[in-house]
Length: 293
Image (cartoon, rainbow, N blue to C red; front, side, top):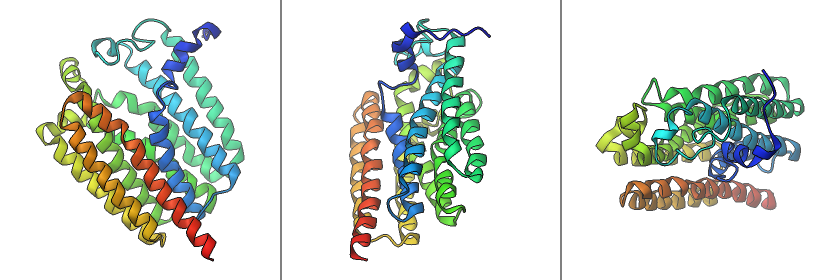
């Protein structure tokens, strides 16, 4: 395969990696930080924090590239995506694959600073990132696969810090999976008419007129599971207050999304604040405990 990456195509590569739209980085970053703080029972070692933070950026970028590669013949039929670099013909499929390989290689170098058990778990992250884009052709539950991919950093974080996978991490994993399915269903609602025409599957289509009910139910389950995680971690009133505020934010998203499909996209973007609030609740709770110790 000839090397086809070109320096003058950087603006298109930036679009392919969605570096101009960092919402995906936030939605992957906050849960990863939840896990790091829970695993360390406070501020994690700076080196592990840096490795996981850089890993989030690289793996999210790689996921976007392989997603656009998988959808390069479909994005032109969807109004929101027809100007993406591959769909518009600004870059080639070979360039996209080479960029994906470079990003995965860079992410792999970060593993040199982690224990071998975490390295083994990382293969799951790569597998989920690579297969997710193709799921929408075969199942109405691609959002579940995305949730699995977006949550995989959690067991990796616990393994990197504690060298074990306690029950807590799997409850946290399930909470984040439910949250991801909820917010990505909002996202899928934006494209639902176009997706139905071209045969793309999603939870928005699967849930149909019950979409909002399912989303609210998943959000409620997310909060209950996070509450249980907080109980297991002996978190206190600050974290409980963060969950209460998150419930208010979910209610706001519902009111926003009910207005129109375009407002569903705004509701999706708003989940960044939910992730931030939950993280701040955890971090501040641990900080207060540490100060009082």
